[in-house]
Image (cartoon, rainbow, N blue to C red):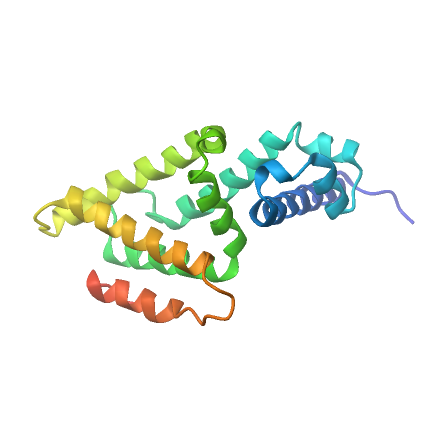
Length: 197
């Protein structure tokens, strides 16, 4: 057997890091941040506690990394060409991304809502959350203003509250309830004169 290359070591490292991030996300979202220890995460990821500390120096750093990763994904989907101007196609793509993310990454959204409702934990991830919020608000304001909305600031609040409310209801809905995500996404498209991407 030939020795591993530097690229193979890096790939293994990235896979372990991703495993720890996903394990942390799952446990934080299902048990709550305060009810999860580093030992719990290491055990669930089937790694040693010492190895986990090689990747994340504390539970707080892991939480921050989980949130940063989720927010980075959201920012990548928003204003895709990064020119600071939001088109109808880009807004449609962003809405579609959110609904797809809700369907495929429900645990992240559960954690997201749990964090913003707990002030002492929210403080740990406030900077990441505010960077997303500021960028989305500024660009979306220009989008609504350019399209002649009477009060773009108010429209942003309605838009954000609608998406947050739909996401919250989906994440915390009874498991037996068939939440109509696609119909609701299509309704949001219709409200803002958008088309499915």
